[in-house]
Image (cartoon, rainbow, N blue to C red):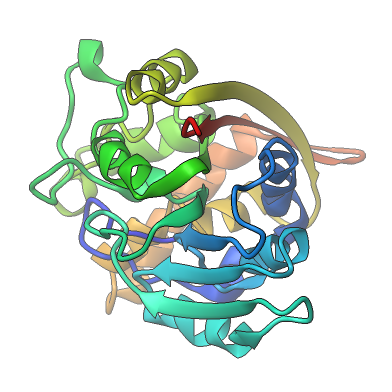
Length: 292
């Protein structure tokens, strides 16, 4: 899912994002399972960072009478998502709108504002990523600043629900950050490589409770069994590598050289076994209900 990134708006690739689509969707199913009944019989729902639209269809399956709007900053993603726009079989409606969720302000009262793997792209005020000192990492500055606006837009009994990756200390990310800030690459790729994009579960619970919400916050580490050639590299091509691809756009030889170095690091960190490549992936979830 997409929003603004630390190197500008990354060029998103819907086809690459769908690589390993099954493992990517599982956290959304788990998030939806914990969302309580919504206050309206025909709920209004906002999907922040809707991506290519397929995940938004799961919202329509859960709430078939809902009026659902998916928001995304990537026109490439929206071009595919809009193929799903229109009436739903349960009397609801799907629509997809261009918006940067870092600055999106609700124009309606909502029963549910949901975001699936997008909020970690929302930056602090000012728009540029910044390197945080060690003691400041993990505080999720940026999207938590939007919570008061979003909670205020919820109807009584409405819900803010999201999941974000919590694996920024995993080799897939630490190796990428180290490579981006290495002498060969730091001048072109170093900015934002050590940015703190998400908070810890306790911090999300505190922030949302301070806004008066009933909170349900948890984390899960999925151990995905990936198949194919260099599957972790293919996974990161759809997400973590997008800012790198944007920075190296128009220079395919340099991009390929960077990918070759990163690929070799990933092969050592995630060796392929007889049953595939084991890829642990931590996710952080939050469901916050506004009191009636």
